[in-house]
Length: 219
Length: 293
Image (cartoon, rainbow over the protein chains, first blue to last red):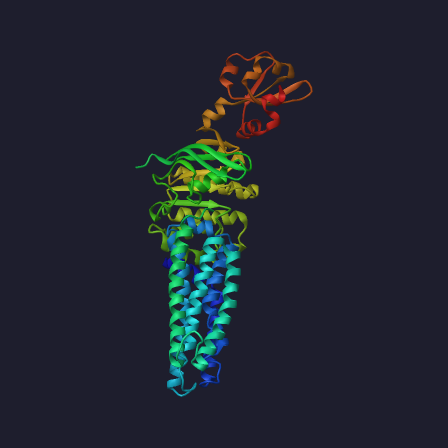
């Protein structure tokens, strides 16, 4: 599986640059942002969506290269086996998702050093992390079941939903209230926990489903 | 030691509008089996079944002693597939490709890989998408040879290549066979390629194997026959696989050459048949006996 991840690392040369630029832009946003007002302020829907990009770009482009060069049959003939092919895509999604906690750590350091405000927007990073898991879960399940083209449509649909969820999360976090969940402070925590749980469960189920589907796939 | 690199019995696969039926193939270890047949005959489907890319509907399939469908790394490490449909990643160079592929094969030979690339005139730093079609095929072959594949399956490797590239690729295959390094299954519709390197020939047509036997027996059994068209109205017709009539003459193919050579009818000319003659006269509907009778 490591060989397949290395393959993606080598293939995603240009995309790594794009991801780095996005990450640097976010880092600059961290440095400039203040609590409740900056780009990284708690409840910023736009920042939530932008944080999804590293994982989204890595997974989508990895799939795109397989599709463009017709490499799926080749991979299926190589030693790692189909469960490893599936596993490598999910690990790629997880690995690039780790940039979100990395951004969170950067934000915390910034706050500790007094550079970027005094609040740590845990909600923002938690929402992004969970949404990114959901995005990868849907896109990869669609990719292994229906192929690249349909997985693009699925990803776009999830992106649209992610925007809506980020908006809802923003409202919940800003006001601390949720129509579905009772008390103000409890509302925010319950929403994030629910979202995170949904992300983890969906990601795990998607992985299992993809392995099952892909093992039966004929080329 | 496995005696047969490939063995199938009754291998069947159905699609909408096409069926591969009861395919029986056998490839002895260390030899070359040529799979010939017209376009759409089932060559690529056969190769996909052998490569584990398709699951047979029925029948038995063994590749290096294992069922290829769902096979684990132990089989795949011993198998090399060179095909138009199994391309390597274009944006990566040969050096990049080695960096990740060598981790898949415990027996990877880096020095041999470099030497083969050099022999094939492939720049290690050049993107694979910038290689010519012939070089791409040679690159795939270099990978297969560098992990010491015991069985190399080539799907139409010479199709679309210019005569020089074809000749070079065939020379490489010939040297692989001479050194006894691997068993080879070679599918093509360019039959002259096989006459250079194949030990056995399997002829597939409309999803069915017409014959699978030693190339010398195939060439000995068949012959091109020529003579006055009136001969086709005699008992000779029973010896003919396919033929075409001219004004007052005919040319055809027989699969009972020995019998005709023993007692040739007056006016009949018997000549050695090439694999192309065999394929053309067997495959063309308008050359069939019922069409010319």
